[in-house]
Image (cartoon, rainbow, N blue to C red; front, side):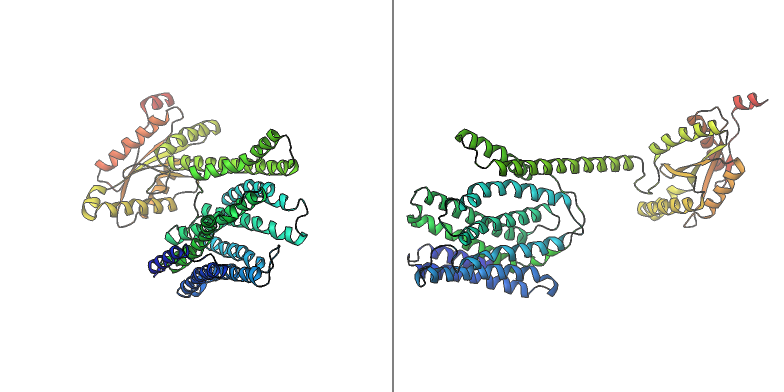
Length: 486
């Protein structure tokens, strides 16, 4: 259905290029394409679950009001002869912005599980930069000269303000999380078409004010009108697409990355204020000084806030990398790197406090046979289950780490040989899946290095293995330490 609608809309827009220049024919062609887009949005919304219909109904309301404004605009000029702002059509045209903004807000809220402050800062930065342009070239000039009434000035200023709201919501949608399928890009393309049409309309208005007769160029006016027809059609195609439901599907938290296009937009927005000041200085008339100062200050604060967010993000990622580098991926225990940092620190504390410290080296018995029988995934599950079981039966002050393969090490501060053996026996009894382990114990002699201590515990482990496995053996004292005690 979306392909059929897209082809029909494309043909209708193509035919529209050749309709007579009569306001009734032109208005009728625009109404036909516009209301077809509204109908497509409503049909697409009706096919969605009830919970997912709200944003599309808001979009349909905004589009319907805007399209209705086209018909009222024709009546205003041709029947009622009302051409000065505000015309009866302007309220209908302007309703597009709040309804579409509300629809986008609902989509953004449903797509994200929490507040994305980074995306909000980016959207505010871009909106502030382009908002300054709108103020200097559209909003402020509309209030000068007294050519129209105050209500007319307000109406004229309302269009760029509505566009700024659309820019903010579009940027927020693009910077947020969630799926980005075909409906997503059709929707953003439609919003972009509306913004492009409004921009061209403003440029043409400025050219007319400067005496350039662009209003008499038929093909140019027809092209501008076609931009809005494309926007109506893209909305309809997005709603009819089979993946329209995914547009409001929630997504997990994600890190907002600073891509090239996004960086370029932020750079352009940040440079708007100094560029405008440079242009006005070159012209010898700085007549928007206060607006430029306010925008510059706001952009500076926003950029500083964004930099602070990036710094915090880098710090968090660096901390995560450090933690991952010190943690075994399979069992979640400290790895050999973390052990090599912790053991010398524990020995130094024991030396300072005059307290004992013991280490033990554990090795699962016949682990290779278990792997060959049940497969490597089962072996991984055994390692995870054993690590969790042992950790639960050791003291809270003890440190269990994975040394490599099926070999683990335990640091037991302030533990004698008997206390160490008692703790390991509790852990040995909790070994899952009917498996056993052998262990070697070494109590620090107060002089040996951490490597020497581990070597003694490892030697005791091999004695336990050679003695038949499933047992705990304490290492003999070093000869030099034994001689020193004599």
